Length: 248
Image 1 (cartoon, rainbow, N blue to C red):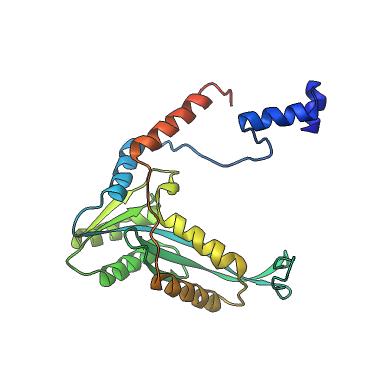
Image 2 (cartoon, rainbow, N blue to C red):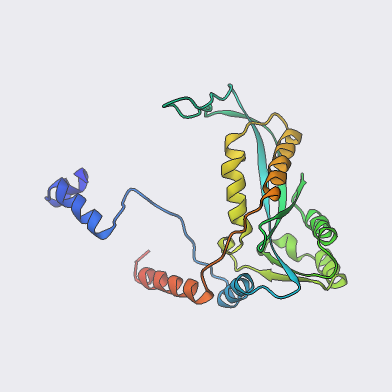
């Protein structure tokens, strides 16, 4: 406000009032990216439609991988929270390897099927599909919401799916992972467990994550999707109108 007041010849209080009146926040920059997928509208309607109106006698699972989870150990002990003082961690750390977490979120109940793998290839994705197949009763159809990662579309995966016709895949548009509800669950995992933890090995990290998931599944909470496809597309249309002549 002070620098803008000097540049514009106005008072700092006037600049502050204008910012508040119009809800302007120059100090905040958020990220966003508009998908260029030619099937964007069709895929949005497909994914959102299955969230809002799941098929009968079927289980809808939001599936994704959280890759390269690092086993980080702080260089000094964590100082616990105390009155008037938050918990403190050193800014530096020691890396002890990585793991990948494959997760399938049941959008109806909020429970999660999860499995750790040290690598992130189509072989691991195929093994995870078999885990899902074994965990879900055979009489239920399975609708999986996935992103467009290459490992989800390899020939071995396609052949396996042909032999298991109860699996139906619904792909989110390119650069639109926000449409996958499991990403919201990954945020919970990061904020509640990973960001506040220290691990001396990958085995310790995987054991800690598994324990957290087991506790989550004792009292799962679903994430309820509320926006219709039309609401989403109207919002994006407004953005496109705003940036159409931006000059960037």
